Amino acid sequence: MSEKRIRVLVAKPGLDGHDRGAKVIAQALRDGGMEVVYTGLRQTPEQIVSAALQEDVDVVGMSILSGAHATLFPEVVNLLREKGAGDILVVGGGIIPDEDVPALKEAGVAEIFGPGTPLANVVNYIKEKVN
Image 1 (cartoon, rainbow, N blue to C red):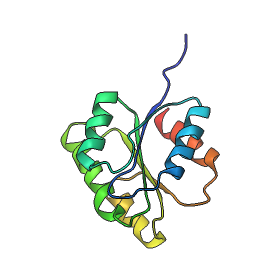
Image 2 (tube, rainbow, N blue to C red):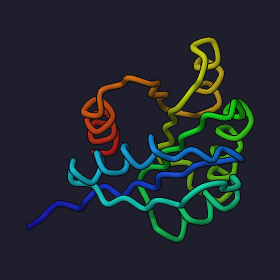
Image 3 (tube, rainbow, N blue to C red):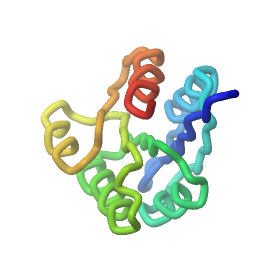
Image 4 (cartoon, rainbow, N blue to C red):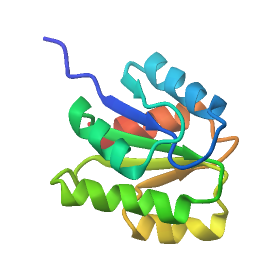
């Protein structure tokens, strides 16, 4: 009997127009045996949460370079909670100053992966937390 594959939604919130990192992460997660849904660029928190619910994902991973992480990441977490999906693991990455990480974690973002994080660390973290 095969075990259920982890489903991950990779999203680019806000006005950020650069998605190379998100695509690299998506491929690493696929290579790690996960099912990945990529939302594309310039997604609102509402669109991200709607997609997460429609796709029945275990994880929402957001990548941001625009500096709006302090607003957009917690908004996604709060909307998931409001929709009864607070059990979905939320992680983030991109250009996020170290001093902003504690507030994001306090807001419900489980982990932040910065530039240079080995891809295997991201894959292993998600597998550990979801299984």
